[in-house]
Image (cartoon, rainbow over all chains, first blue to last red; front, side, top):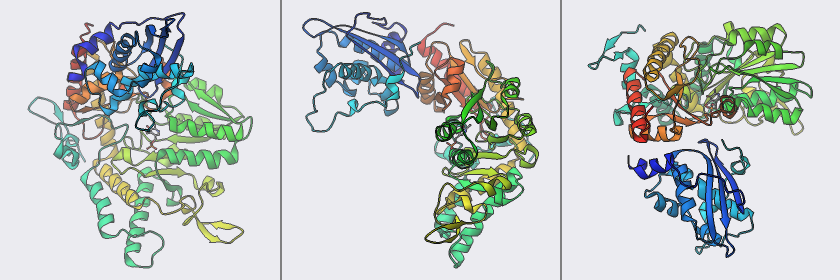
Length: 151
Length: 420
Ligand SMILES: Cc1ncc(COP(=O)(O)O)c(C=O)c1O
């Protein structure tokens, strides 16, 4: 099974950026209740508005944790506008694998949580060029964000 | 039917149920399938598929209406299934057997009809903390409408109900106790007979959610004497979209229908209507005819094997699985771990590996299990876990399936390379 490549297992067991950022501008919680995944994402912006640091806490499956680890590296130096453009393609690229429909939700949890946090802080998603709303930004059900409990 | 015990070439016990795999067409295309998600839904034997097919191919007319032969045949098959269900649960009369879409609809009917009629502010509904959402949310809906309160009976860490607490909770305020016969997440078989007696002793009604027991245990309404019972056809070799609400005739007579339409009336005027007699008063519109016929066939299939035999088979397989999985370091099993009070459902977790990942790796080995909260979020919160992996057995599973599960688990541990 190539889904569980060494990279993913390694990032699951020894995740990067698994910590709090106390003075982060963006803090957001998200959950995939059906799977029992809970994440909290932190993003710190510098004076120029670029992401200076990002981190996460929480627990979940290997895919959601590895994605959170990869995402919090990838955002560094990017603008919120750039981050808001990302979708499943980006996550598949970071993970180096094509997630099956049953696992896309796991892979997207960190990204969607971060994007929700950005939107809550006034950053607006651009309309996608196709005129269709970007499917990855259709809001997760409300309850996903209510869960701030992180074990 | 008597169990013939044989051993296959690997030394695993084979029963006649094992050999009954051939009754299930899904194994023809997928002979290596290890299907261990029976608590979610069971596989379907050929006789059930054929019965459904026969209705659609040869007499797919509506019921209770036509004067013509085909409709008469459809009606007699549909009503014949009702009699088959009645006999299966030993209800006093077919008036007490209402076809629904499933256990969920059956429970909602009780809550929205009996509950709304009989509950008021200050009244209490007693549930258990191990409730499937389908025996919890309907009562929350009723609580919103009537302002009644919901109380929960707790379990111990092994998933066994706290009976002393039930006795304490029962009071003049209590109007109904609703509880699962078998927990779908942990497999615990609850002592419902005792609980029903306790409730009845103080005049309180009891609803039994039999979604996980009707497929696996003999059920006898005369012996249990509960007021309401709900189950689904699809977990007991029958089709999806069909289930049963049993209720005592006396209670049904006083319950108002919640759906109106064809079939449930005897007379209709512009100003009012008169309800049909039981059980049709609660079956508005064209019912799930093919599915009801399929359920009747499924019950005949189960009876041919024998519910006592199925119960025994589940218990033996569970015992084998408990012993087998207990040997694997890092595996934590949930539930009573005692086949006398546990049905063929085994929930577990592996240290350091998320249930979702376990299920995915098992899927790679053609093993179907469920990972998640199993529609029991309050139970997961009680156990302080977010999810489990759940293997659930039925009459076509055998020791070899369990062995493959054990190998799959070891593979997951290897992939994650945890040294326990
Ligand atoms: C204990 C229990 N109750 C009720 C249900 C609901 O059954 P259905 O979804 O078929 O209506 C289930 C099914 O998962 C169950 O396990």
